[in-house]
Length: 291
Image (cartoon, one colour):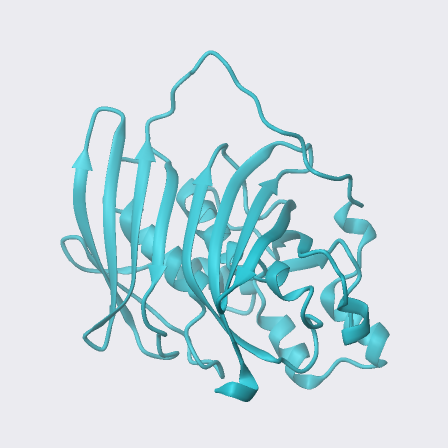
């Protein structure tokens, strides 16, 4: 299995080991901690496997409690909190080596017709994704070559990411920059037709670039890091159906960073400008020279 999109689908295909208990793989990678989007996506799969298929998830609220260890399986324990006529609620606890590392509450809603609909339009007009370079192309253009580590990462990356604004490479370029970022994203290959897989794949992707908006006024996104950062909590609201293997625009901003924490908000649109998903996350930021 060489296609990163296929590997993502396989990563989200949990093993059922008991009623409402599932086990997920955690790939062995050269990372300090398990990627938060992976844990959130797998936890949402576990919740969805215990619900009726006609009720898509409409929101999730999660806390990252401890860093997970790469290469060690994660067990997801699902609590059936409520099964109502319109809403279903599940609570998921992720356990690794006997310790809780993450918990999530997800709500599922039977689709209804409200009789009215509105949304704010996207904040700005952006180029189409085909007009923008990939991250690898930008790095190669700037450095004249693509470092081996980045090339290996690009081959494993399940999402094609294209920054709307060109990457900044020096501290002078980030001075006085607005804490905003926007990227086009889509899975690098087909994800099948299961709506739950697309929802969980997008949940995975939602944690990849959101905290960029916090860092942009402080340091270049690519290059030596001055801060250690970690996701603290994560919330999503799913407004409309979508496919994660089709282009979507992830518009991100950070309204505040203070006290070692930064808040980021994201809005995910399809190519026609329809708002699909809203995201909010807080991250922990600590200066590396003080660790």
